[in-house]
Image (cartoon, rainbow, N blue to C red):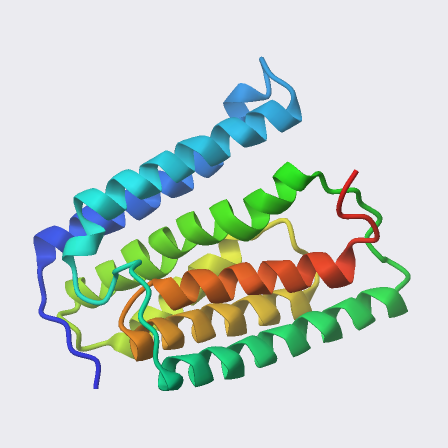
Length: 214
């Protein structure tokens, strides 16, 4: 059973940190007036990444089960493999559905953007969504509504990925968020969620993009 003592003050700090990251997501609405799309995106990403590190080292690592330090065991590896297999299968199914609709993605990703999607994005999203948001909700409800906290944080995770429009994509995101929360709880930290999130993005790139490198 997952246990977490209520700490309203820490909960509010983490939730404010999360919603601050949400506001940063809309930063391009301002920067696009003065900079290109690529520059605006990098400014937003850099700001989010710096904030995530500040929040982690200042607050998040002091709370239960949010360490980024690796923990190795056969049990954790088995959980990871099962979760990865499910997410990989869903990504492949989503790709097949895209092909059937004749909407295959035609894109050329630079090495830098590939690193962003497989390293930087998984790290700061896990700190904010599974760390700040989920943990903040658990602390706020004094650990009594773990399932409700997981559902709310997963729905918000889906809603923030508004670049997707297909219903199946949102189902994949919802399942992904649920599995990321499960592996966080089972492994008592954020290390495996970050690795799983990165692996999920790597599969997405592999099955969707014809040319990853320019």
